[in-house]
Image 1 (tube, helix red, strand yellow):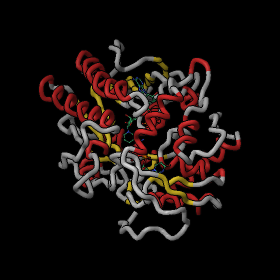
Image 2 (cartoon, rainbow, N blue to C red):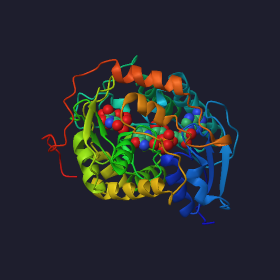
Image 3 (cartoon, rainbow, N blue to C red):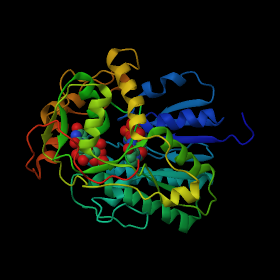
Image 4 (cartoon, helix red, strand yellow):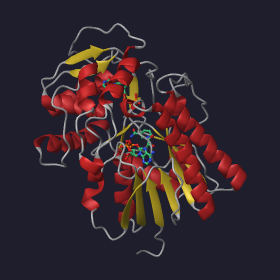
Length: 388
Ligand code: NAD
Ligand code: UDP
């Protein structure tokens, strides 16, 4: 082990981002304790590390107290896709709030440094654009996204109170939409949905008219920034710091790029916009640039190419074994069925119930239905987009 090697706890380590973080921590010579309750994550994401002498896996729920000995904690445990976090919203809030209390308590007992994976969702449907860290946000406290948004906001409050009250070394990163290999094909997020649909030649489902915007960060860039925040900033640097790619795209532009890169004949179809779906999102990353000496390197087109290759290997059975939905991810009902497909089995089974999830989705998607244009596959909307 390297002289500066540490023992690092990663909660949510079997998830999409957690598994990439663990790859990098092990690569840097650290001992890693991966903690996960496998709600949305899978041991498959860390299967390539099986038998690694510096990795230990622990099945545990962060809403329960934890007693282990570590030097640093990355707190990532929380379902991140709207479909998954709305499935059991009370548990989502508990995961964010009780999970933060338990991990902060552990850090306090150990004198450990702790980083919180917060989110651009703390800005809600932002009235300020792009979003700087100083913006307090525009969040509905009682809507279907609130369990996630308010849970993460409360977790941030706890991190800053532990810092002020207990002098704990805390860091908060606000992550904007991140994509890449090991995203769950059934999690309902836009990048995975569109790629799987395009690879299968199925309709691409745009919610609303597809003019809402997002800024997509490739996973490797995100992990670099997250580790720099933990390792390369002074204790006085608490954040919050935005991490994301400021390139901003309409959802329709994303759909068209995916169709083009896949070489698919898929058509764009329009479905109702879910309630409280943010209309625009783009990080102001001035702070990350100055404090972390970081900016993203991977352009959307390049990152999508990598991600498409990953999903292609999953679909052809050459990549990781992930059981995909039998039918289209498109319509609400079909999407509900798709996400309930047996993505894992036996002890790894995710506790996602068909009826409950379908009901949650119906409520979320149809609470504020908006007229959607007819299916089309024409040029991108002319929303202005910065250099990306
Ligand atoms: P993910 O769903 O792939 O990973 C979350 C992991 O947490 C899963 O492995 C899941 O099983 C685990 N988990 C959930 N509840 C738990 C609990 N109570 N106890 C223990 N483990 C639990 O999602 P992700 O995209 O990897 O997101 C990781 C973190 O980053 C989350 O906190 C999320 O809010 C945050 N984030 C992600 C994005 C993104 O675009 N991916 C954006 C903003 C914030
Ligand atoms: N979206 C879409 N079609 C899909 C999935 C998502 O048009 O099949 C839209 C969704 O309404 C939102 C954007 O894509 O405007 C990003 O959704 P995602 O769930 O990936 O993340 P969010 O940023 O909303 O948390």
